Amino acid sequence: MPFRHLWERLRAGRTVVPQTRAAQRRHLLERSTRLGPPAVALARSRYAGHDNIVFDPLETEARIHPDGFAVRVWVLVPKGDVPEDRLEAISNSLHKLARLSPDARQIFFLATSYGLRVQEIASLLGVSPRKVRRSILTAIAALDTRETWSRL
Image (cartoon, rainbow, N blue to C red; front, side, top):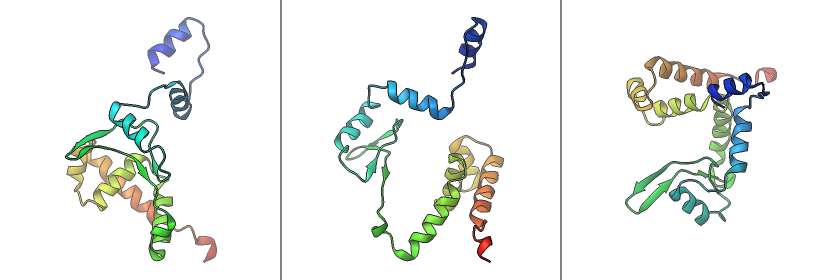
């Protein structure tokens, strides 16, 4: 809730209960009768029956593609499709990186997976180079932690 609305309610003598972001998101989704922008709504209705394709409830991103349009989704990769030697490494790294903010994860993957430099990431995301460097170092530190100290 914007500060101005909170202030007006306080001045009017009404009680104000600040909501967490998760509560606000749930409330918005419950009130929503639409499925998002037209491209996203069409994709949702077309692929609703696919168990391995999951749409973020608040997804708004869609892009023009030569064969139609593209909408961002989550795709489930079953454990059986992942080589056994890679499954544990991927699971461990995803578990450790899940503790970071979404911004820090995005910056880390742009640097490591796509090979972008600090300046390129900063200009791409509209953040300072310092934030980019800090996020990369935080992600490296998170991956470097050992959760098996008790076994040693």
